[in-house]
Length: 351
Image (cartoon, rainbow, N blue to C red; front, side):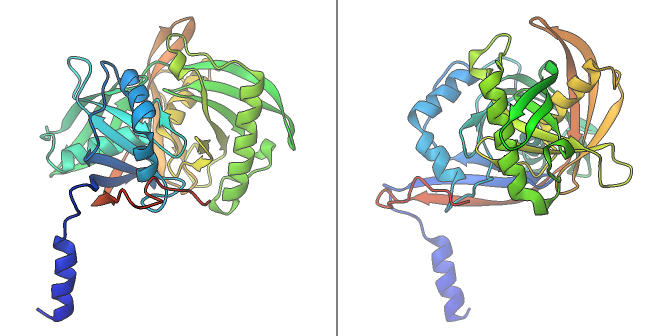
């Protein structure tokens, strides 16, 4: 072994002082959208329900969210999941979703990625040809179905919480754009759906900055002029993001989505909860029927497939149980250290 190899091995085997936090994570992605799963190192997050745990982390450990999502350990578009014991009997685990702004209520790309990681690492034993997981999220219980073959997860589909069209064909004035039309849909989180062309944006990587700016302006205009109300939970009554829609670029795909959510994050995938809300809107308009599939590509061209499993009601809303399917890949694992003397230990963002 050369001297430099010995030196590098020494670094590899180094352990931090006892007063440093040592947080272990596992990274994956669904259609290009990152997911950082926290494995260990966080303090216990208290609460009898997922929403209570969400509030507890927000009140007590929000600096750890920013430490893991922000630079220098993350970036402005990082996304994460904190997996915890279940709150409800019959579920496999519960999860909190974290990002640059705070804590989302549902995340489809994360469900697909977590299912894949749990099975391909052997944390949960694979069942052939399909493994079923029950995952408890802030907005409800998700049933995830993994198609398994030769030790790999080749496809994940999940049945979402009841999803619905909250508003259809509404008008709102957006500074710099004028009056535009939007639909408001819930797929575990609320999104304002707008036509990309009418907003003067292109759903391609080169228009990344413009998408963020216009998406934020649309979100603010809708929030300022319309109530966003969940039938049962006040903690879910907020507008999470703007989803631009339009024709697909890839032949054979039905449509394209680009979601701008949280504090200007751009979803690299088609947005799982956004696809769920979108099929609910299309069903409400009579565009798709139960069982009919819709393929939706992302800003990168990665694809999620959405469909309606069944019709239901949710509060006063006619609703559906959507199915969303896609595939995830594992990237790696890491340990992050937090030196208590580091002035930037809680992270920062430069976009």
